[in-house]
Image 1 (tube, rainbow, N blue to C red):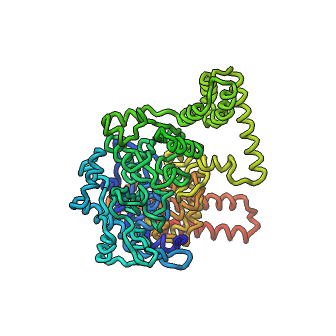
Image 2 (image 1 turned 60 degrees about the vertical axis):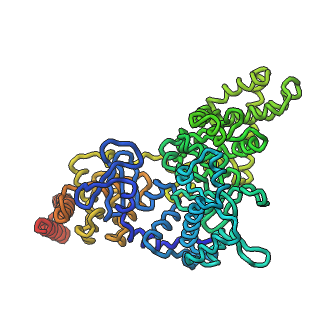
Image 3 (image 1 turned 180 degrees about the horizontal axis):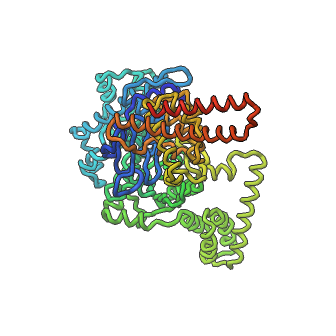
Length: 638
């Protein structure tokens, strides 16, 4: 596996990327003055544009909701990709070859990522085209019997793998892909004698896409009676396909999941198709593996799972396998801040069969009729026992009390304690006692785990529910209130300091390094702006570079990062570049002149307090006053 992307490559890709081009794929931007663009914020609903983009500075900021950052953060927030994925995506866009900390180029032994993506894209085109061929009748019949017409097949990219030894491999070799690349992509397999053949043959095919919409693998369903392979076959683990980290349908669903803070997790490809066609357009499914921790990490990024207001709805078959899947999901439920639910179709129908038999509205009703996950699990547990006997009730209570104790929202526990008592036909006090005992036992176990240094104790369970940092990794997000332009005031002194910092951050070419250094060592009356000033002084070595403003934003304490970005994109009172240059020169001159006046007043005060007989000190102060007056004259002449 490739290592960490070299920092020099990260900076080079950002320097070569026009932020306005990337943002423009998602937001309609209009001119907002010299060097500034604006549009409706993609992160919250608004009527008038408050979303500002400064391509020259390389930053964006919304003055309505506070979202802001560089081009990488924009892609991470919009498409819910990791930092490395954002860098790789932009590098591919501009044709830049990345290098990694292990010293190797982006091409790893398992194949170049861009080539593997290209091979999968070519394979998808091949499969989709073959769905219309005469030998694909079984695939078309399979889809039609499940209520999917050609338009639906086209929407989801469904295709057909011909029942031939190496039809796909021959097609892709003709497109210039090597045998090593085809093997690395998982599209071909190797037999015992070393011969290669198509992995997918005689099957209906679904492309599996990552959150950015790139095809990274495939899922295939058996059609032919003489096919002795598994019913469902997926792409094996490759450099770009990791089944524990991908969710089928997420590329289609991620925007709506992010907007509605709801995701519906179903069990198969046809269930995802049925849900989306029925109007449940937040449906996703795992790909050949059980729902696990890595899937949760992906969904938490998409959900923005840090408020506890989101919903995760699981659909399970009512059979034994479905019950086991529900219990596995419940075991990981604590990792979500969102509330978890279970939706079961009438008569045990899955979404695909339900849509086929009862229509689109029935699928929507099934999801709307969801029940809390813990209630579902309690009922499943009770169904295993004979509640007509004392032994059955005691055993059921022993299993269900920890479930009630594990409910995160403490306000819900008393209600479910009473409900459990009614289900069991047992005295409320007895159930309360069992739940309280489970709570105490859980606390004791967590304490012992912490004492032993167990890294999977309750502390890490809480950490797993924390928001992700800007690079997609776990990190406790600071809860200090953010400092903004609106919160720092607008008195004349603050306004002058604010505009001077805007000039230094936005127009370093017009301010110049020497004058910027003087601004960074001037006295500031506003404490928040003084924090930004100090970061400017500390990063003087990056002054005027492509990463200048972002370096400053990265150096201030987290609550001040948004303030730096606001200063970096806030519009200035100028109509063209000449006006911007005049503004930058004028406002910084005014700030420095104010500082010189302060220094002059201080020197005059020292002169009054100095003994006239101390001629050397008096002479030194007088020379200082002459120099201050000369500096002020020079400033006014510039």
